[in-house]
Length: 284
Image (tube, rainbow, N blue to C red; front, side, top):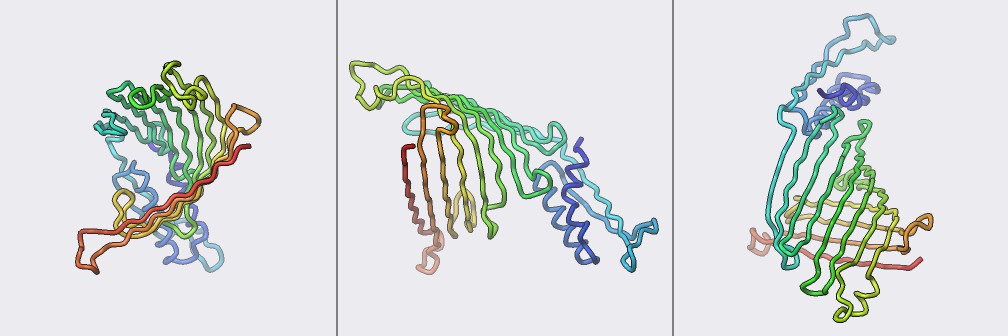
């Protein structure tokens, strides 16, 4: 069911290959990229001399035959429970890959908390757009956050965003991501007599239209539980574009983390982690 353009896009490097070694290297890279889409069980490449007489000068042409085995099960579902800020929550996610044959990922996430907080998110992702190390992502999200226990208010949010990311954080050039977000926020269920002025001043509806750029560079040995390496992330967000919405600001943040194993001190199971975050918020 996969469209042939998904495979052809990964074979563009073969056009510039001039010898068997370069063809072999390009095929190995293309196979790794195809398997990273997680829609194929395997991708096999066979190279042979072209049957037709299509030689260019002294350079004969070669036929490259790609055989892929598609995965039968492309839908996954997961559930879990967690606690955030003292509120227990249950979440569920359903994800489907390659539904339209373009290696896209479609998913829906739902979360419900014991204090009436809930989240619903619908998203779509297109990895390796055009055969390049680029990713397109779009999502819509609806959230309800209950702060009644500590701050006597609830917050409702409706957001829609699109983003494009180029590169990878582990590569020397890092990863650059540009995103646009449009959101509507409402602070509600505020008791007038007992709420603070800081909460009362935020009551009602507010809209935001923002453009964000982030750069990340990482050498972590594990993305979830790293024990070695470093991470640098720089983010700039500008809100109030085109006079849309009542939120207008510039926000700059910088995050750095360093992880060092303590094996040299006789503690092979432990590592030292140091993190720092800086931020600057400017009104527009």
